[in-house]
Length: 170
Image (spheres, rainbow, N blue to C red):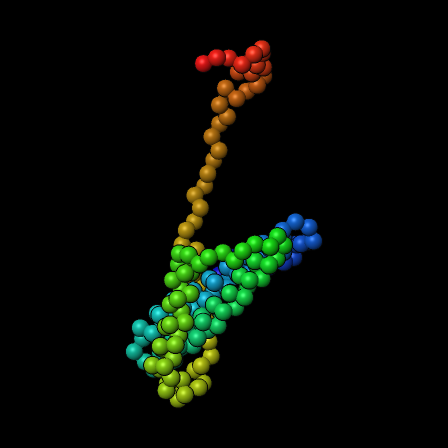
């Protein structure tokens, strides 16, 4: 989420009057919302493992937030699709296909299961902060290899010859 947020922030400061900049910006917003919904869903699963009622209340808040953010991401997908150049809405696939099915189901069942706790502990209904994790993958340093001498044009190399005459028979 952090990197999508940074990309959106930096791109929103650029001049988007020419090219497909607006469409790129819509794409980043859409993917940011999907990532945020997934983050709240998985954070809710972690909180739901707790044994205290406050943990379950926080988990339900996360699941409900994930459901709301997921519906925002569907709107962002539509906005992306109708931005120039107009494209079809991409089909759901992979992890997001699973989450589009799972998040509303879990949010509904958990809010029914722990609805009485939500009524009792109204003060805890604030959306919990997501934990801040470092990026788990770091790029390796890469050094380009030396240019092969065969690519040096000054030393003669391979010369191309134009085709002459009639087509050849095979």
